Image (cartoon, rainbow, N blue to C red; front, side, top):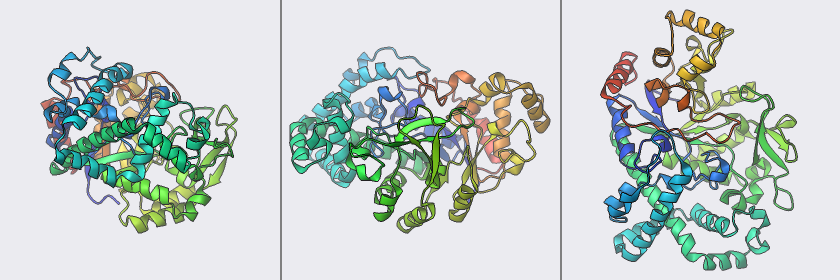
Length: 502
């Protein structure tokens, strides 16, 4: 349970300004931490930090690993300050768009420089630096060895599905693992090194934030992608057929976001097998995230209680079935390993009595989104401010929603806008709607509120991060330099103090 009234901002690392086309763990991340501190904020919430792929829409929720870091977030400026790269190396950056990430252009620029950093390090690194790398590899070998080999094999086999790789490595025979670890030794070492750089920069930023009283909220997707080190290395954890292909996949039935549901396509867990192992894979995964973050949002919390399972041959999520998961036993097991589980339950969408009971039993805070509060039946709507409870997180909106301004000007109908004006007692428009939502969130009885940075600034629908069920334009929005002004910081600090959240 959250014990103290506080507030924070939601901004993913990729959305930070930077000179190199994508937000990273360099100077602008530290400047944002300073902005948080000056604005009397206590939390910085981000999206998953795991690797992304162009073929998967660059979504942080579809990754080749549940444990590895996104190496595009490595700061080249930090590498230059450590003499792993030179200042000259950074002088030839192409012009990048200021307000969005051009992932293809970013990869074309950053990946050769990361390759150069790898070469420089192993040619010139001191004994002390090499020891740091070797300690990292040893401390993380339970996931790092599999990931580095999988990532390298994935490139080597041109992203062919891993269950179609040669039999010896598809089935992870001793001979196969030995052969490919030897054949691809240098490439594997490079991937391990890049993970070392990512971790070193992440924990340096986390330490800086902790010293300023800022805590990180991370995001843990419930499912992993089939083409991932996790499924390849642990096929027994998932429902796969004799050809190691999913025969059922994950999704959700029709909901707010889609009339035909969402067919995610991820392999679903074999909870019977997991239970027999004491949920060992999940225990390791959650422990890894607790090490990375101060609090962890479990995305699609419903799936830990009951999950929507769809035949892999289906084209939509309409025809599936609910399958129960051993939620009580699972969370009791996690508590034995981590007595103070810092979990936030993403309980949006379908909320069954079983989900509510599970959250109450383990005292997990859920989420209330103000964008869902207004329209019909506001008086009884659980997202409306007067119906909030203390043990929850209140958001103006999430990364899957439009911005408040975008919603008000483009999506909310006349009835909803009139109801909102009646509720607030104000005449609302595109200029004041975002700040009114910020104030409503701040006023809530909820102990913790999180404001997407787009809503704090008052940006329109062009600043939307993700539109579920669409491809092509998602995950690319970036904060343009100069928007985090001293005036905005002062106003945020003032409203935070006014409602007892500093």
